Length: 319
Image 1 (cartoon, rainbow, N blue to C red):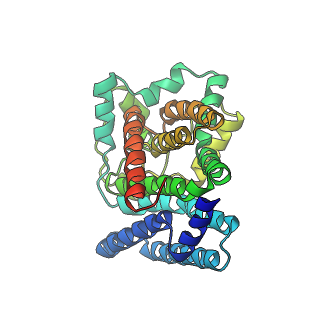
Image 2 (image 1 turned 120 degrees about the vertical axis):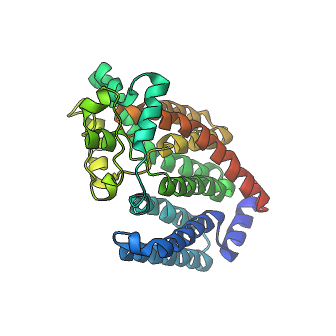
Image 3 (image 1 turned 90 degrees about the vertical axis):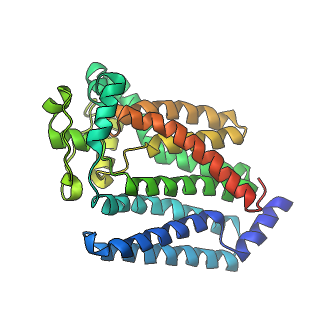
């Protein structure tokens, strides 16, 4: 109880690290916007979004200072998690102005595996059961984030802000990578150049193709399946030709896996482990990523977990 009370007092006096992570990202991308203003397609909504995000963050902080309770703390975290759905497509507004690099990544994939796993996996293993299991894994992304955050809230409230910081800071570092590494992924690149060329090992440079075009292939798998259709609807609603390498779905799943291990709960760790394994294979089964994206996500996610865990400790906050 003493630790929990100390968290309430400290958090009321200052912004939490997870809020500083968002504000730092907003400031960095605002500076980038100003430098690239003339090349951005529509920078005004991007600027407005940042103003709203900062105002919401400061407003929830002030609410917490007036009413320092667990409810107002969870509102602060929930607000930042909800904003992730807006920050993700925002990366596309930046990287669409750079030359696309998918031809390089598809070529490296071919050199490493001798084929395109994202093209062949769903063709070779097309059973409805496997399709639904993998789509379940992919769809579990945000539910897993919510489950880990809520577990810390209920069982380790004194470390709730810590878990939120590690998750959110990892997201923002992925977004920085995605801004400067314009890789769209197989579902967009294969559609742009044609399956015939991909199947023959031809990977043309398409330069600025995705600056204006956002067409993608439909999600492979068993059409009509509950999770297949949910994943398809999610992609139709918010997917952009961005954020392929490294896979943040895999990377964030690894971060959640480490946090689950740290929480010392097999009831949390085992489901997150199973869903993370499904997530890993699902990323290239549904053609959202190249296999090398998923592999890189394992290492990058682990590095981010230990990096932000250390930063939290160095900041003077105890775990």
